[in-house]
Amino acid sequence: EAQVTQNPRYLITVTGKKLTVTCSQNMNHEYMSWYRQDPGLGLRQIYYSMNVEVTDKGDVPEGYKVSRKEKRNFPLILESPSPNQTSLYFCASSQQGGGNQPQHFGDGTRLSIL
Amino acid sequence: AQSVTQLDSHVSVSEGTPVLLRCNYSSSYSPSLFWYVQHPNKGLQLLLKYTSAATLVKGINGFEAEFKKSETSFHLTKPSAHMSDAAEYFCVVSGGNTGKLIFGQGTTLQVKP
Image (cartoon, rainbow over all chains, first blue to last red; front, side, top):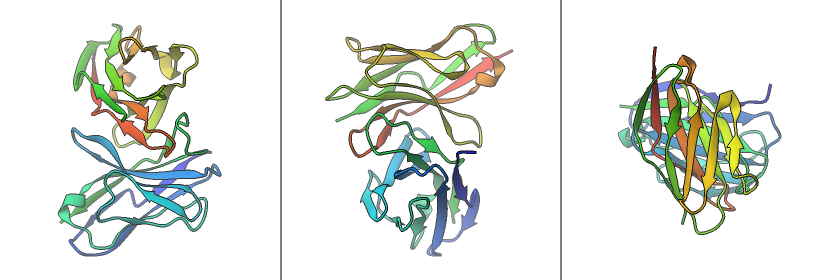
């Protein structure tokens, strides 16, 4: 089954404790992206990757890091999480990064930073 | 720059009645537009997409949307609501060659029995 898999689905942690949210897709997609969803704001892009070893900032990259060492994986790293990063996070992928490509989304990761 | 505005944050309909979710967009070039649906505790699922072909786009589960360039609108409709349609709906415009999707604020659809 074609899917985007995120782990963990839920995480409660404390300020400053480094964490990684993993994202994996099995569709051989070139393009991957991370979004955060906050009430009343819709989804906003954090980082994206057009292909292996190619990443770039989205609209809200502060406090986050990403890497793309393999085509299928695109982990999101919070080096020193803070309470304002409490949010619902989605990983997405598409065949390519063109404007007419719909994206496939994971089921989300709900992070709570205390 | 691209942007999208969903005109209603909450819409309530009775089961079996029509659904209308309104979306206006702004784009400096011919846009790609999408509607996604999000059920509780789930990711986003693509309902339909417009990419400069037919202006009336049919999607899954009986939904359709009409692209109106003169009105810069892309409203989502369904003739008859089902209880399973209760969810949050997002109108989305493509942000160009970076692949970024620009989301509206979302519309919560409530379906009453």
